[in-house]
Picture 1 (cartoon, chains in turn yellow, blue):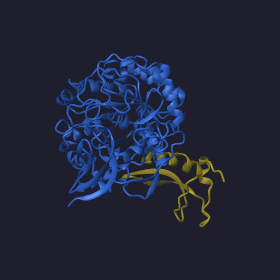
Picture 2 (spheres, helix red, strand yellow):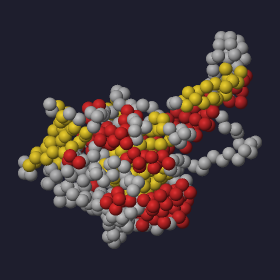
Picture 3 (cartoon, each protein chain N blue to C red):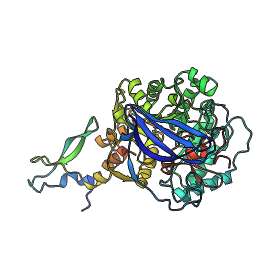
Length: 68
Length: 450
């Protein structure tokens, strides 16, 4: 299912039946820690990465780090 | 005790006849020995250092040249064009746009000087570009010479390359005109120049006087400033000669880091003995890739560790090393990955794709510095954490690499077949770089000016 980033908070955790909340999540990239806002289940803390992010900026990061 | 590493084929340095060669190691050195029935035995140093040559491996499934320009008749390296026996696609195609030069360097693979040979006309250059595109697709282009900036129509040459469809165009220059003629730099940028491969042999003028015949450091700095002004990426390229500038490597790297992100990296070239050379090689003094990795670690006081370097995925492993780093806010260098050295088998084709993409991404201009004027614009989305990561990768990355060209003394034809740096000759044929420049002991070439 196509999911737009703007709908981030409208998702529900299937396991806990809790609505995901936009939360600051720590992302570790190489030696640097960055904080990004991602929808997260308040109960089990599972983070949801939507298609737009996975195919957008996350893909850009992956390509940027691609070695030769 | 000597260990046999492999058998290969090479050429006699006197008559250029193809002969067998033995590669062996002892302690931390690797040598090639070969014998010509007519001209005797020859021995050349291939590798020296704390990383043994046997560990410097990256196996690849060979690529197939889909549209060979020449037929296999005499066997490698006498059928270059590329021929059907070649095992790698073009990553970088070089076009020598002039044979004129405003320096007369002691080492010059092109043996260029103040000669008045007529430059190639634009139509010929267009055909050369087109042939590279037909054979190799959208590879990276390096415009070389001679000194390419002696041509006033270099912006037009860059424009033609982009028109034909090449995304990345770099010039290989001594930087003299780039430093002295800002309007020219502006015109190159407007034409779409992506990157400058800047001859940069060291951080003091004694080095330039020895290698280039005159002090040039101030000129190089002016060239970098002009590139900074116009957002053109710069790669510093030292030609390294033992006892001339091999002890300046750490300084060159630090200099490059001070000029990041305009300077995108340092690409080292240990001197090879082809074209114009000041003397025949003294093999004990030859610098190898293994030497360089040890020297970098030593001269940067472990700030750059040799285990951050990897063999290439595109050309033969023994032709180069590279490492990628992120420069943190406090100037620390963080290695991106820890160097892949033994990861099974990859395809040469994928290696060529990655190398092209990598050069385009890492060696192009960094773009203007993001302005933080304290005013929050409502039209531009606020930067999030992902943007920060991307900025680190794209603006604050720095690369270190080295390529060891082969000359007639240390030539291993196995490596030639894996070559991805190809010179386009005026007939539109693509010749592996080392073969195009290779000369015998008396200076006779196989391909150049043939």
